[in-house]
Image 1 (cartoon, rainbow, N blue to C red):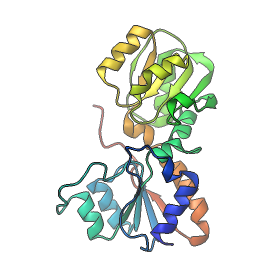
Image 2 (tube, helix red, strand yellow):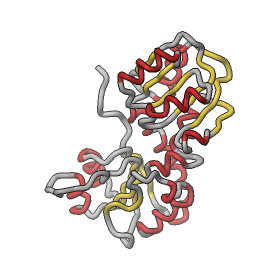
Image 3 (cartoon, rainbow, N blue to C red):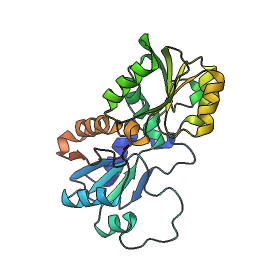
Length: 252
């Protein structure tokens, strides 16, 4: 298969035109006509990920986060962009379009967070999910479940001393939507990259606030993406492997 065909396949379940206007999704490095025999999946492209891709003879890396997001003023040797070009490895990013997809990042996280009656509130612009726990739980008990489901080391939180029942989850950095979360009547909000002032606001309004590490949350979509691509590409005998398995940023 060609890179262009893989792009078109991803577009069928995570349409690139649905990405946010600020985003940079699609084919970012390589040729549409390059041949693909093996696809590597990762949350981010780093030099260690490229080392793995070279060792495993990967032709195309599909990531969630775009390698090129801000304008580049230099492309120097040993930087990821230079190395991908040097080794003929193409790169496609599926970011906010995958977050919004029916079986994308936020849907996968809703499952990991054990949510039922899951909806996609319009006020979250399809970038989050709302659902309920089957039974209300104390925050600490619920967090222990999340840690187990995600396989992560630690989670930051503010406990408003309210049972967790009605939950809103936004993958990535969704703390700017706290007012929408409150308007939805949630007692608990889960997202990543939360600044101090948002924790203060949660205390003022009595909202349970859970910060899941960006990697630990969004890396969860890769197995689902692998399964989807393997199903679609099965007849073409395209091999799909996950390159980013563990979070290299440790909590000690």
